[in-house]
Length: 155
Image 1: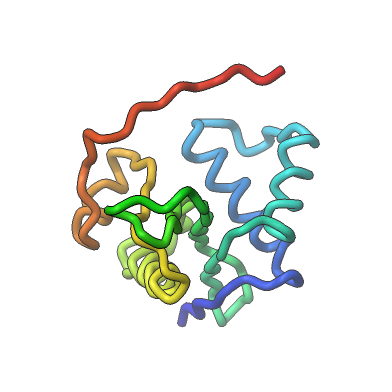
Image 2 (image 1 turned 45 degrees about the horizontal axis):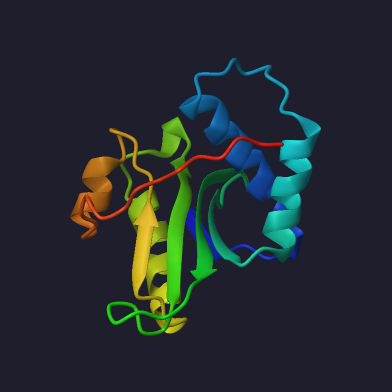
């Protein structure tokens, strides 16, 4: 049986473990890859202090964390189409290969959407992989042509 729950401070290590597993899979990195300390420390800080909500999925038989999903909250100046100015970005949606096709990702996302609604969010964005796109479409997400992006280099 899989237990889904909102992550708390005591869950940071579990959240980090599953997030790093996800990053290795998504970026085709070898299992022994070691992440830069700056990335891991900044990620821990964000889990601890960032304006976000994370849902974790754990196998109740062995306690292993097998899935994660995070909603990051963004406040902007209110507009006519977004009168609260509250928006969100869904990211790090991942389920371990051995636990896929059981509805875990769908349930995690639905928990986060409900939480975002309670917080007055009027728009949720995400970056979808080809593999994840059908799930997001099933949940009502639509491709957007409204957004343009400028990526700035790190200095």
